[in-house]
Image (tube, rainbow, N blue to C red; front, side, top):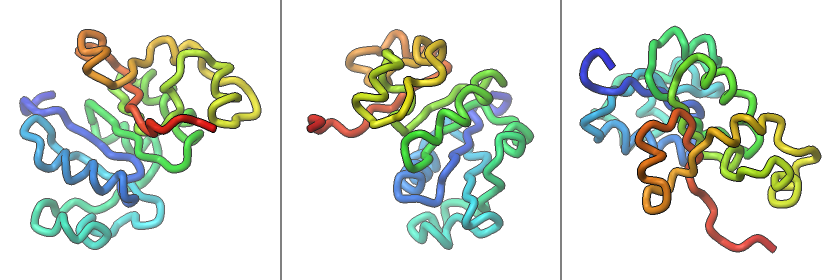
Length: 163
């Protein structure tokens, strides 16, 4: 955080959720948007996919690889990857690199590794039970103090009851 702002990267930034996150981050005084990734739109200006961001940034979508993100020297990575189950490929490596990871998927929301079979239809329990223990559910009303120093934040999502 050399400039007094956190340098952020949004992975999966070309989707609806990623676009809304970009809008919020571009308006945040404590964030410098360092990169936004998209496999499909790599090299395209962000505002060509998200016209509402025209005039807000001249960034282009960059490569969607962990190595490419690490070269950007970011402080925080937001994962906006569809569908659920993709973040488990990213989080361990980003976390191990010392980055703060904010995951918008359901991949780290539950503490019990076996619950992923029941609630999300996974074939096996969660492969990273150690990271589940470290993940903080990103609801400040319940976890404000834990969130202050969290390095892995699981963003709350779908709040409707499961069948």
